[in-house]
Image (tube, rainbow, N blue to C red; front, side):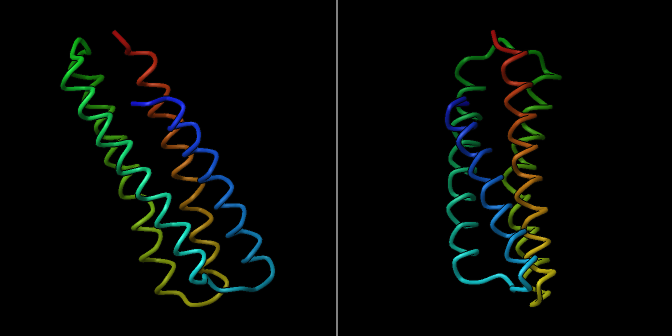
Length: 123
């Protein structure tokens, strides 16, 4: 896992979530630009997850419990935004933007927790 990329991803997810929350506050449904931001975040999250899995295999040395926890968090990181998007775009009102904001905050928390576990179990 590349820690600086994880921090950038977490901060970007929070910024995107704030943008979605402001859109909800002004009674705006999710737009094309929201989707574009979601896509960028998802691509970075998937790439980061792939790098982390490769590093888990190559580096080794972590306990089975730590590896299982990290992999679980990586799966959650990758699926958080698509689930939020599916729920948000089923609701074409301001509440769709609320759902996207919640998905963005969830992604940031998952990235933070994954980074913490990664750092603590480092070999």
